[in-house]
Length: 480
Image 1 (cartoon, one colour):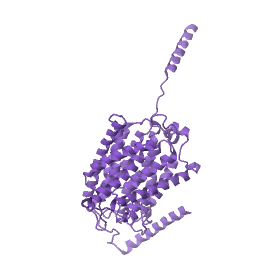
Image 2 (cartoon, rainbow, N blue to C red):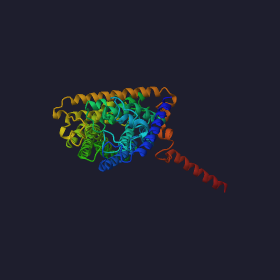
Image 3 (tube, rainbow, N blue to C red):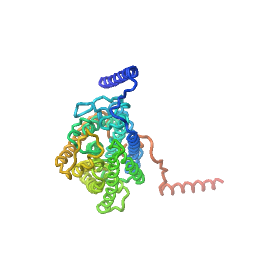
Image 4 (cartoon, helix red, strand yellow):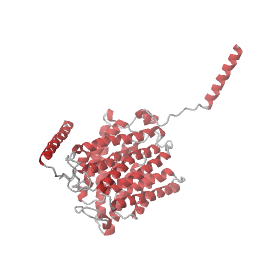
């Protein structure tokens, strides 16, 4: 009944929009629904930024596919794109509206002002006043679509595909969308507290990392955890995925300026510096602590940790501080992985340590290093300006801590509840059977595999084959 009522509401909005359009054509000729003039440069940049972020979804798929075992490599690519499609539909129907509606009086959740993307072509959102609402919706959709894809890495090789898609749909609606409104909504409660989160440290990385931690804990360890070493299926895929993610991250962070301006440049620059330094630090620690060589996977994992850590402060601190973010990310996220191993929580691809620790760390560092000379640059007159401890805004770190606690608690509690309920419904049970896990998700859930191996005969089989051939030839000679 609720679904019927929801789609009935959308239908009513469509009819109202149609009637409004008829009246507009009848009574006016020179009016516009736009609240401010569009800027063609900003529109062009946001279109490019949205396209850049899209590359991050297949990039994430390649990154996870390379880290996963061969038997699960195709499914990691596949599920990333499936989640993209599911969330894109949700976002267009109601996700964008409840996340970014700028007419809601609530401090907790938006309204259905932009349900089904109605009234988005000829209006601008208060958050992005120089581009069409529809463009801002598409740009934010790309971020919404990749976020659930992050936490699937925590249980790689252990989750069924259909329940994963259902969980991604519900999780985005209940967890992601409210957090988006809290932080970036025109009237969101964390927005009103002046939390400093430029591009999604809370919304994307902290929420995904917290969810990954809960999923890994509730779903349990792999059936052979601790009994053998897991081999990364293809380090070259990891490198390809890292390159695509890094490339897309410049649109992810740079686009949050909502304009082609100096803040966008600043965000892209700091992002690059943090990723570069964190990759080197992680690789060095891998060499010293884990006795590895100059690990390509270590470098790539560290780079992603640095990019994730920089997200919150990319457009709020001066570019040189990206070096500090990268240094801290390389150290804290690396040892976050060690802590997870010590706790024997089987986070398959280290999502909680990279994104959860990185997101939280970035928010705290931003509360320290944000400066007025950056936060007050290229912003609208209605935007409240604040800074961090370096400019003696002592309340900022407590505000950042409040945001971390609220987002982590919201994400973890809802994830635990959703997983517990779904596991009680047979068709929505998330974990595959032990037999299916051993065979691999590619074979049991996708029905296709990345590689069709040709089985080589064993030494004993070769000897037996030669003996059979010899006996056959001998028999033929006797008969002749």
